[in-house]
Image (cartoon, rainbow, N blue to C red; front, side, top):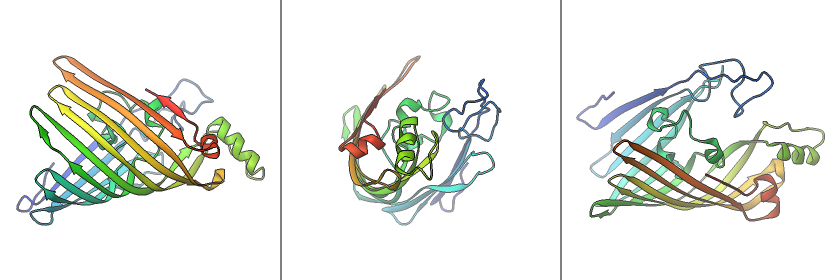
Length: 268
């Protein structure tokens, strides 16, 4: 939908929902799904996006997002940034931005925009942070029949991961008075997130490469200022009756304590 005043403000929305249940009574899948089928699950999301012009070169964008979480359906600000055109093919944005680490990072929450029920968690669970607070630049030169996006970024944020069996055992050994169970939430801070995202768009699809350097503080693991790298590559093809998505990621911790808490992983 769209509402505007002199075509300077637009409002767009999306809704995606699903009914999910599993056939095992003593299992929780993806820390959310049980044998009780429910509509109010993490696949159900409602979003509203507001975009308004500030002047001929600047605009502001905000997106409100409500995720299904049982009885806890809170509304959060998923995007909130100001953008400025600094040249014919260059733009700078500042605020709360989508963290461009995956092929579909920009529309991860919009369930109808990709071909799966949900993005493959073997890949997409390896980076639990989906936004950053900071600055990025978008440079989009045209290259004949193709176009290129070069997007450097820097910022910070905090996230929440879920303890694996080995992580739970490690945390319980560190703090026996407060044992941790697999699936428990682990809060962590990322005071530095910096990297570059590059996308080549062509007639039949796009090819993406990206790299992020992260500094992580996780009190539960006794980690402060440890670093990790996150590299990814992806390809989409939409040609005649063929639709193809393929992606590969590599998470590499750069120290022993960091690797014990967030182990090196590769997935595709």
